[in-house]
Amino acid sequence: MSPLAGITVVALEQAVAAPFATRQLADLGARVIKIERPGVGDFARGYDRTVHGQSSYFVWLNRGKESVEVDIRTDRALLDALLARADVFVQNLVPGAVERLGLDAATLREARPELIHCSISGYGTTGPYRAKKAYDLLVQCETGLVMSTGTPDAPAKAGVSIADIATGMYAYSGILTALYHRERTGEGATVHVAMLDALGEWMSQPAYFSRYGDEPPRRTGAAHPSIAPYGPHRTRDGEVFLGIQNEREWAVLCRDVLGRPELTADPRFHSNDDRVSNRDELTSIIEEVFAGQDAEGVVELLERNGIANATLRTPEEFTRHPQLAARDRWRPVDTPGGTVDALLPPVDIAGQEPVMGAVPALGEHNEKIRTEVAK
Image (cartoon, rainbow, N blue to C red; front, side, top):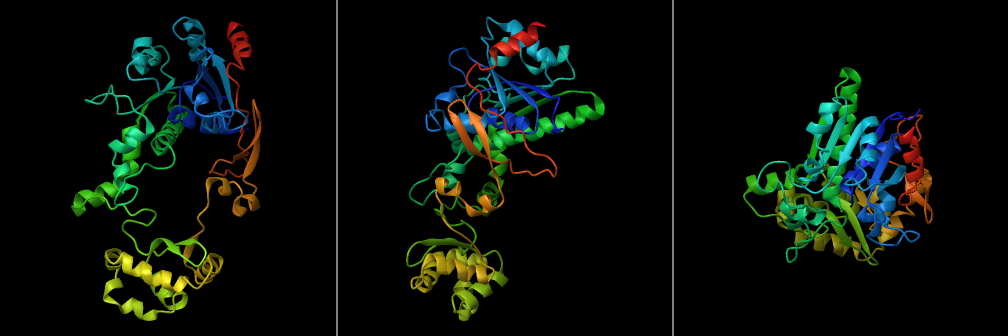
């Protein structure tokens, strides 16, 4: 039996954060009923058409769910019937919408105290930003992430929906915590996750560094802002990423990889702070050594001497990563346009295979769910 078999989740969700949270629940065996606008659906369905004619976002975020079209303003009876049977309700509507609709936690849990009600917002339920709309890039801006990423000349956003992902994961863990609490006490819970808080937690280290170090963010491209050497280094035919975490590894790099043991005594590079301050000079020295070798040879040399390293890959190349293939980390998932290869969830539970059900077409389960509710 899957860990969440028997748990029913009703999701009034859009875009990324809430669907990411509920997809994790579906992978664990929960029944996730996704409420979608008639004829339109979750607007993430229209973000692109790259996966067999469907949105890459929607395919990623919505496997294993049931789609039912409901106009919640005119067909409230169906939604109420579904909520009467739900263990968990998840919503990420615009600020104030659930209160206007009578779908807020106070209203729903007054009738059903055992319900777990999870809301996702941009900035929380109080304060001057409580009614402000929030999308991923905008929250990246507000939390300082954009000013911490990029080059000295140009700040940059993260290349994935990092604010949404952080929020979705905290919503997921909060729901699991609430389910565990209910299992022991019979009490439901009111759960709220703000995007500002979720990504803000992930931004704590650079925030501490800037506030208490009394200096602006260090935007260093693909290099680490406060550790050196840690980042890309050119070879004869490409770049190799390497990372040094302590003085022992620094000594090994100097002696056994670079053939320059005297660098450990060089006052420019004596400590990590010194190496960061003199990063450009250090990078030049490393790249001078690597200039006569190809990237593959440098990786072999680093690996042989226990120095952490990586190959720079594109997202498409990641899908063909030899380590994932060797560990059998892909599973076929059906979509309305055809089968896709989907990566297994990161957490392996011995003896449990994630459900990883099909991605639903809009309204695919209309008849099934309406018939079920009518009984």
